[in-house]
Length: 346
Image (cartoon, rainbow, N blue to C red; front, side, top):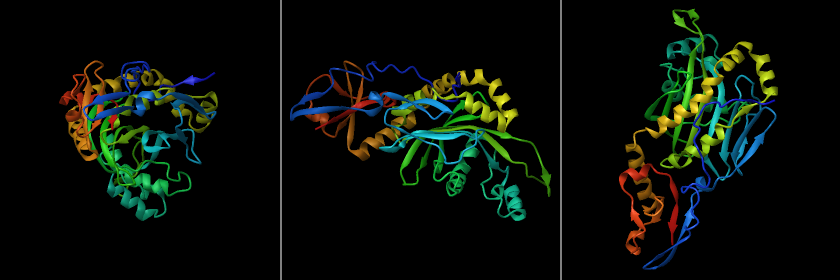
């Protein structure tokens, strides 16, 4: 029997036949300079298939990939789901990561005592918050990716910046909306969450050398100004995550205490999706408006909406001049928070 865990994040009601996903009238538009075409955005036509490796089971967008490190423990089980055609779209989940110290002074002292130990090489998390965790993440991800255990598994979040704190998750960590630069130099926008836990104190040389641990680490990411289009797709996949009995037996063997914590919080996991999605819906829209206007200008688009369906489209520059009908109008600022249903191209 499968033990279903709605493990962190972002469940939404996803109706494939809603007006945002399917519009049989879309296809072409007549303009003063001929006929132009409408191309549906990928998030609006995504179908799902089941991924099952005997340990986890979840729904992923059809044609996408799941990447699991070559060696991974049960208590720190990690995976990534991504579009192989656009690897910049996807999410990373890690049940737990550890090995971080609480201050740079503690890290430096540990490194002087044990130069080859991982505790002295990983960046310290100071302060011990979700934001502090992700500010240290890029260095630590690069270091982990260089080992044979992870082989470029972790997402490297260079130049991480918090755009907005969306509130708390049910386990006490923060839910952050932020940006970073990936290893190819491209700007990404993402939802981040992690719950940093102080495992106790171990005083030595006047410093606390006890390590920290972070649970339920998740990064949902897409190119800057595109995250709003992908949140529901990524969320639907992650919200279907199930751990099998085989997994739970392995997890129990590794850490009996942690499995009791997981069981005790099972109901909380079911509630987290609603909390996060509500926070996302109440986010500050000013970043969406500014970043998406900049994106349109850079890519050479203008944005219009269908007055009959309310759907928003990116159109080629000059479309509004070419089009003399009444159905498609320029968007207002508040419409930049809406999912793009497709593009209008010559």
